[in-house]
Image (cartoon, rainbow, N blue to C red; front, side):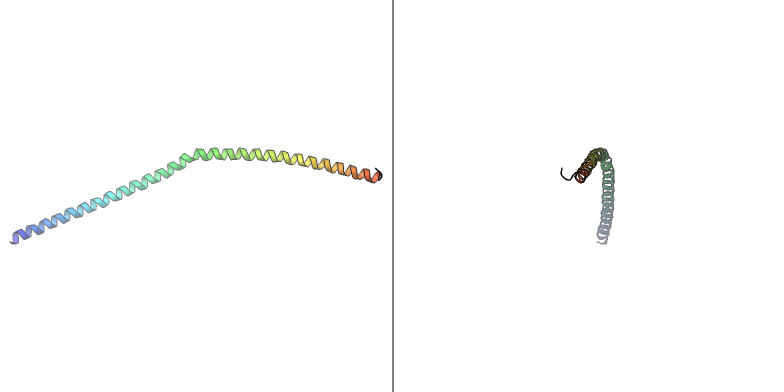
Length: 105
């Protein structure tokens, strides 16, 4: 009777070893899958930046163009306002001088 019990204990030990080996293999597979997922995510993030770069460059170029146009437009407007102010200043000075020289007019 000891012999069947001994064989049963040995079979149980072998079964436990198989279970332990399967558990280690499963953990290794999970770790490999996680590492692959992290690697894929890293490559995706790097690729995403490369995909966005042309759009960002285009947006930057359009913004610089719009800024240049607005600068030119408002510079022209400022020049016109300065000329208008100078003309009004001359007209006001001429009117004041005329008033001082001929108060009846």
